[in-house]
Length: 523
Image (tube, rainbow, N blue to C red; front, side):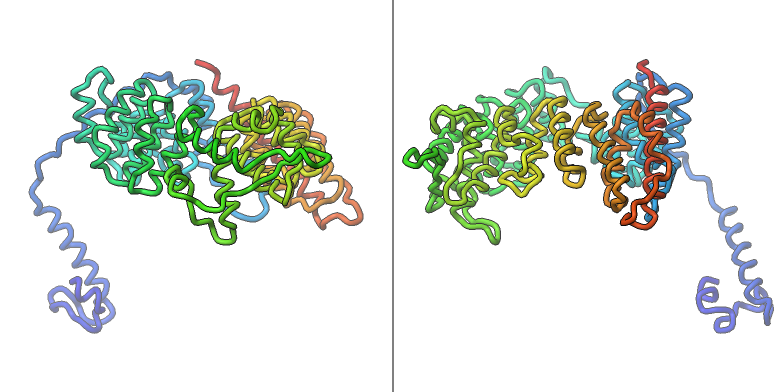
C-alpha cells in the first residue's frame, strides 16, 4: 500500500480484491489503508505502564493575585510586537513582559502552574526573558524541562541544571561532586561556594587545576571574580604561566583588580615610566613615551603583543599598561593633582585620546567614582557628545560607576545640552524608572523634535526606551502631546500623525505599567 501510494494507482495497482479499477482506485486505496491501520492498532498487546515521574518540588511562594494572573495570561498570548513596519498607537504588550516578570520576582510571587507552558515557550523564543522567566517559574520549570526537549534551555540556563548542591559543611559530598559531577554541576558548586566560602572554593580549584581542560579552566577562573581578595593572588600568579592565552589574560585582569598585588605593582611601574609632567613649557603638559617593545615580562603579565589591524604597536602596548595600572599610581606620579586636574592637563604629541581611553577602561575595571567623574566631565561641555578623547560608549561605561541619582542628573544635563540623538547609549545605563529630571528632559526633547517637524522614526529607539523606563506618573503630563500637531512647512510628510500615534502609545503603555504595579502589591 505504501508503494502504491508513493507511485500512484495508475502506475502501481493493488490486488483487484482491494482496489476497483478506474477513478475509484485512489479512494479505495485510502479506505484499505484506514482498515489496515485499525487492524494493526487492535492487534497490539498492551505494554507495561511506564513509571510515573516523581512529583515536582513544592513552590513555597505565595500565588499571584487574580488580576495579575489574568494580566500575565494576556501578556503571554499577545503577538503585537512580532511584526514590522509602523507600530501604531497600540502598546506592545510583549515588551511589558520583562518588566512584569521583574516586578513579580521582586515581590516574591510564584508562577501559576497552568501558565508555565506558555511562559517557557515565550522564554524559549526570547533569550532576554530567560533569567527573569526561570526565576519566576521556580522549581516546576526544571521539572517540566526534564520531560520536554523543547524546554531543555531551562536546564542549561540554570547553574547545575537545578541539581541540589551539598552543604559547604559536608566536605565529603562537596569533594565527591567536584570530582565526579558534570561540568554544569561543578560550575554551580564553585560559584555557590565562592559567594560564601571563598577559601574552600579556591582549594577545590587548586586541587584539580592541572588536569582541567583549557575551556573549563577559563570558566572556573572567571568564578573567582566573586569574593576576589589577596588570598587568590598566589594562585592567579601561577595562572599567568598557563598554556592557554585566554586563561593568562583573565588571570592578569583579575590581578590588576587587586591594587596591592605584585602584578598591579609591576604594571604601575611600567605605566608610570611612560607618562610624566613637562614643566618646561608655560603650561604643565603631560608627555608620553610609549614602550618600544613588548618584553617577556610584559607578555607574562597579560600584555598582548600583536595589535589589531590598523593599530600601532606602541600605542597598543601603552593602552594595556595604563589600563592595568592602579589609578592610585597617577596622583603621586603627576604632582599630587586630583583626577580632575590630571584629566584637564594638555597631552603632547596627540597622545590624549589614547591615554584618556586607557584611563576610562581602568576606571571602569576598578569602579573608581572619582576618576569616572573626572573623565566624564560636565555634560554640557562641547566635546561631551564626541568626538572628544572619551567616546560615547566609554562615557556610558563610566556612568555605570556613578550612583543612580548622579547618573540620571548627568544624562539629563547631556540631553538638555546636546539633544536626544546622541543620548541613546547613555539612557540605557540609567536606573529604571527614570528619575524625574531625566524623564522631564527626555519628554521635553521629544516635544521639541515634534514641534520642529523632525523625522519621527529617527526617535523610535528613544520612544521604545521611554515606554519601558519613564515613570508611569509622567502619563498625565504627556496627555497633551497626543493631539496631532500643526506640521511646520519643512516637516516630514505625515510626521504629525506619527508623533500623535507614538505619544498615544507611550501614554497607554505608562498607564498599563501603573496598572501592573497596582496588581502586584507586596504579599
